[in-house]
Image 1 (cartoon, rainbow, N blue to C red):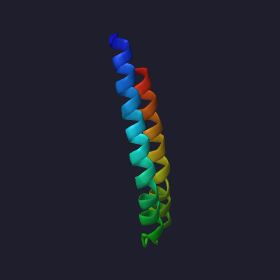
Image 2 (tube, rainbow, N blue to C red):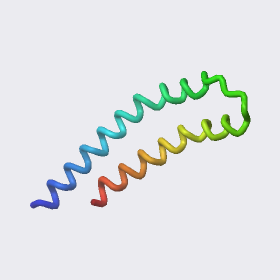
Image 3 (cartoon, rainbow, N blue to C red):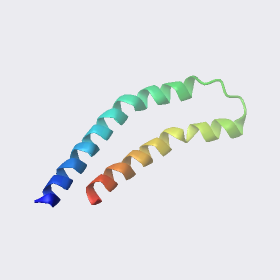
Length: 67
C-alpha cells in the first residue's frame, strides 16, 4: 500500500509543479524579452533561461513519478 501513497504524492507534486510553471512561464518570458541587453553573449545566455526552466520542470515531473 505504501507504493500507491508514494505514487499519489508524486502525482500531486507533478500537477502542482506544472500548474505553477504554466502560470509563471509567461511572466518569465515577458521579463526576458523586455530586458535591455545589448551584448550578444549576454542576450544568448538569457535567451536560454526559459528553455532551461522548462527542462528542469520536465525533469522534476519525471523524477516525481519514478521515485
